[in-house]
Image (cartoon, rainbow, N blue to C red; front, top):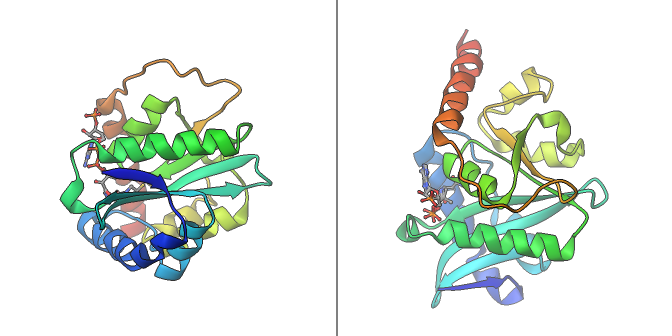
Length: 204
Ligand SMILES: CC(C)(COP(=O)(O)OP(=O)(O)OC[C@H]1O[C@@H](n2cnc3c(N)ncnc32)[C@H](O)[C@@H]1OP(=O)(O)O)[C@@H](O)C(=O)NCCC(=O)NCCS
């Protein structure tokens, strides 16, 4: 398995990446924002993405986006093809995109929003902490990315204060990279409380 910084030679994988994201969103049921092949191509060629390949086969992908004049960067769009899951690949991709973010944007805070327990775990172990949305970027372009998520109405209804996703932030000024293990039960409980509160209201 090769995990490399993406470039023009990887444009041919844009469709399979886009389809894998859409299929995963359907299977998972919870929100994952859709990403068109055109959108993926832009990320493949700008030097801010990581792609995992098994020979010629697409295995995984993640990209960096820069917000608020480089004060923040997000590691977004993490996807591992179903054929390559549960083998530690997402963890390796996450570490690669985290290292690339630190190298290219050493002063930026790194953040992500996710409903996925696996992603929360990986972020936590990299030194991210859970934060309220007010501590993340207020760049409207970032939040526009949520428009294609099926929970976007919740985000709008709460005036961007909360949604089913949890915000997580790595602050280079304060995060120590000590070996940490997340308390998954606490995160699972938080997730189900949010679903009960926010989804119930949605149905009412
Ligand atoms: C989430 C996803 C990226 C995980 O990829 P993966 O390669 O199977 O993950 P890994 O094997 O590297 O596992 C990393 C950690 O997450 C855990 N994990 C993996 N899938 C999990 C799940 N569905 N629920 C809870 N934990 C999970 C693993 O046990 C591992 O933890 P450990 O180190 O404590 O053992 C993959 O399932 C995927 O692409 N899903 C669809 C897209 C998605 O949800 N993206 C995130 C959007 S925010």
